[in-house]
Structures are given as structure tokens and as C-alpha cells.
Image (cartoon, rainbow, N blue to C red; front, side, top):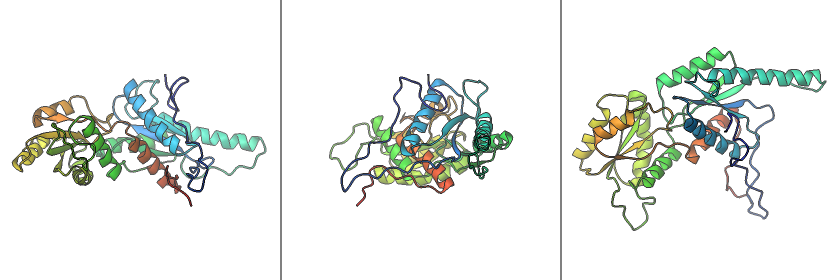
Length: 306
């Protein structure tokens, strides 16, 4: 069983890559500053072992990119001690920082009094959902901790890449547009589905344009939580000449309420790819939000030095 702070013994752990020798070696990745605020991943939706596994994989990716990162998971909809609530995790992060300072003082070591946020909260959301983000804000306020809340993960080109990969895994798109073979089931129109109403649809449309450029097929966004949105967009794509549609969930996964995607599939009468899940770009974007909030810049893996 894993814990909120990392995989238990026996499970694979992502480790930083060994330093290479030579003139074009990869530089050592930047380490997290000593005493840096905790990265708290705010996970929406009903907690479950599958949701926890997804969140831990995202955290593992972030840790592999920034050694020394203190990262924990807080669940927005938890009422179970097995899944720590976002509020309790933030309260604990603030208490731990104060305790470290007090212990250093008691031991006669020089220690600066804690300043700035005790934690940086990153929502595990691809796009804006005013209801969920508002609840995360409230949990931060109720915790009494000084914490900074970042924006959601999208829009971003890496999310378009992830959507492309999920579509290709489902046999609904070619993995590489430049290849000379075709996929018999490849879609010629994509309904990019999200949650969060019209604001979320508009934001998803930005990533949708990037996805359309990758696939060379039309992509239009629709809201799963707005009645008739999916069927209307599917009709527009068919009126424009698309004959084989596919749904691409612009969602990480935990924020998706049960039954919404199934209902959309019936409305659009087509196949669907899986949500983004723990696609590696999700972990990298989570870390990017944290690093930007702190003004640090992790070294991208694979960047050569001269």
C-alpha cells in the first residue's frame, strides 16, 4: 500500500537519472531549495485506490524532475482518514514548518524565521472548473495555513500531446501524422469534452486548436456538464463533413463524475479515448506550476551542456 508521501516498500520509485560523463552530458537537475514550501496536490473527486495510485504517480514524476521535493496529496472530497483531506494536509504542512524552526532554535542552530507560504497548492485539473476551484480556495482558507494556490494545468501544448497519445492508444488517431500508414478507425472529427461549463469549454478550445494541428482534423470542445452541449457539437462536426467522430476527454480523471462520459458517448454515438490520467506531462506541469510560484527553474531532462 502506498502512502500520501510516496510508494511503499516494494513498489517502483522514479529516481533521478545518473549523471553522464562527457562534454554533452546532461546537467544535474536543480534540487528543491532547503526549507521550500510543500507541494500539495489538490485532488478532486471521490477518493479510491485508483485515484490515489494516479495521484501518487503524478507526484512521483514531479519528484523525479526536482530532487528533494516535499510533495503530498490532499483530497478535496474525503471523509476517510485513509485519504487525508486537503485542509488537514495544509494544516500539517504549516505545523511541520513551525516545528522545524523551533527545533533548530532549541538546538542553538541558526535558523531564519519561516516566511512566505507553507505550501503551494496545485489543483489536479486540466481546465478551469469554477465550482471545484472555489472549493479548493475554501479548503485553503479553512486550514488556517499560509498557502499559495496556482492556476489549473491547462491550456498547454503538453496536454494536446497527451490527448493525441490517448486517442492513438484507443486506435482513434495515428500516433504520428508523418507516417505513411493509416488507422482504419481513425476519427475525422474530435469532440473535446470537459467539465466546468462554458468557461472550461473556451479554455479547452485553445488546447483543441493545438490538437487539431497535430491530427489535421477538426476539433471542437463541449461541456459534459451542460445539457445538450456534446450532441450539439457532434452535430456541427457531422454537418461539416465528419463521418467518424471520437470523444477526447480533456480531463485528468478524478474530477469526472460517474455517468457523465457514458451519457456523452450515447449523445455523440461514437467511441472515446481514455482521460489523460497520469500521462507524464501531467506530473511535469504540476511541478512547473509549483516551480513558477517559487521562482525556481528545474533543469529539463535531456538538455545538453556545452
